[in-house]
Length: 190
Image (cartoon, rainbow, N blue to C red; front, top):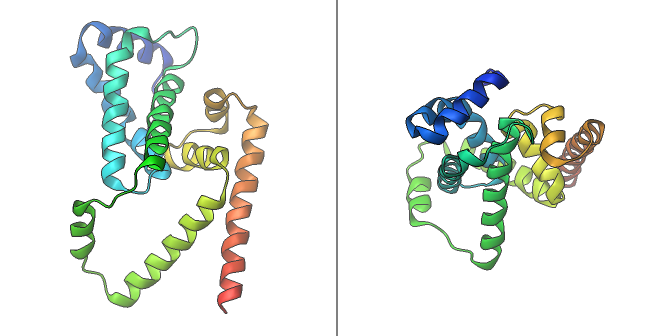
């Protein structure tokens, strides 16, 4: 699902209104929720953590909306910087503590998919996630911004501080690496 880009003057007006009237924030939330959620989902494997980090992102956005300065950056750039920080903070904390949620286990038991199909899906997903994990942090972040959040290379460039062409090169190389890794694994299994 691709959402239309909100016009900058409308974003600025909504952000200013939301600073004094939190009810005005609903339009911003409704417009950006799918993109923020998808971005975070690409970076975080678990849906429950994605939900929490998405909520945290919008909570932080609302609490800091009065600090948004349209002269410094576009609203989506500012919003996704908050989302990136939330994910990075989570990743740092996760390195220190690893555990399995009982809710996650319960959810896994209730799936009604034929066993052979479930096994094939699980294996494909596992291989892709392992291949993505072998990528560098910068490559994973840019892939998440591109395919999870639906950003253009220009928007990613503004958000990361890289040039637009550098973003394109990193994306191209990351996708090529993933494809080659997956093809090599299939060859090794055959």
